Image (tube, rainbow, N blue to C red; front, side, top):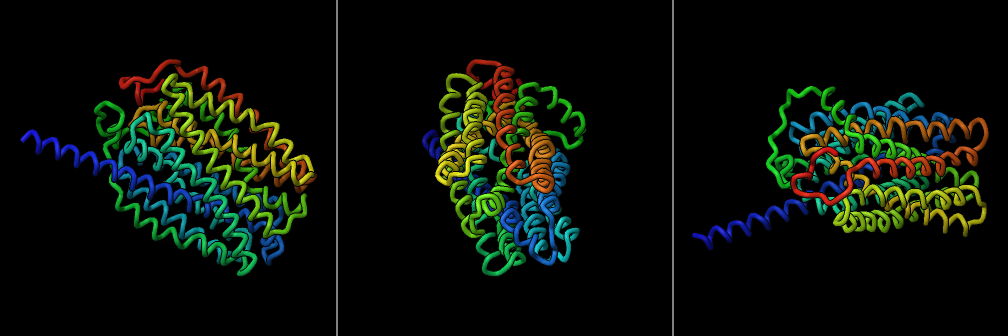
Length: 431
């Protein structure tokens, strides 16, 4: 009987590990298409300006801002639901929504219709981005979350790069409308995959039994409690400045290379996409593993790594955007993006580790609301406004300034978090 019990336990453990790996693979692949859909529009700015829609730079920038406003406003609703309802079903709903909205963008007949379609993408993405990290945190223990988040968020540079490459290629050969169709349709198949995921008990990987949350909990009280968590609140503030920089850079860089550096459209989207995917892979994976290794010695490790890497990126970002030399641009842009992506895994591990297991979807939702409303909602629009009234060369200078502010804020966040080692009793508890 003892031997049978032992074998059963081993079999259950193998099944759990297999389930966790499958969930990570599915959610990461969906995240890749999430960012492909999000950034395919960035490659189409010049085509949309020359098309029958005749978009201005301000209107082009507002497409991303409109999407992100909806994304940020709807996020807290899905975050609240994600702490009490079936997370795989909510994710599947979101993936289907954003895929349909992306495909509908290809039918736009004027700026207003395109704006509505791109903004509607935010409803679907809000469900996925707020709930995905929460679901993963209940598949993997605290000591592995930096690496898990690194794998999950590695889809950001890969998906963004594919958005540039696929969008640019399809636009050149088949037109901007077809680019939206190609980006949107595959997501419907991914939505079906979500329904096969298991929804593990919340807190099951945190060394303590956590009761399932009650659906009647008031959302306002839950979010107010999160705002009182000082290390979490400061971390999100730094993340907002970081997102301002990354969002502005991601949206305007292909256009910057075409207009200010006179790089052909196909080369501008492809070259920048290659830089993003390489630096994203290396930086995100390195940051995740480094964060988990250093966290053995102090629970502040994830925040310190994020702060130091981000501050180190500032001079390289400035040189890449101000020096005309192609060689200097290439070297500095690679180094700047590499250092910025280094913080992706650590900072998202910090967010889920700084709150209780039953708060994680809400914590991600509040974070999504703040970082986008204060970050990449205004940045494409502000850079576009400066470009309209001055030049795009002046507009992109906002990027290194925001990177500097982000690194400084994360230093304060690290100092606000209690020092020392994480123990089972501390896991999932707010600082």
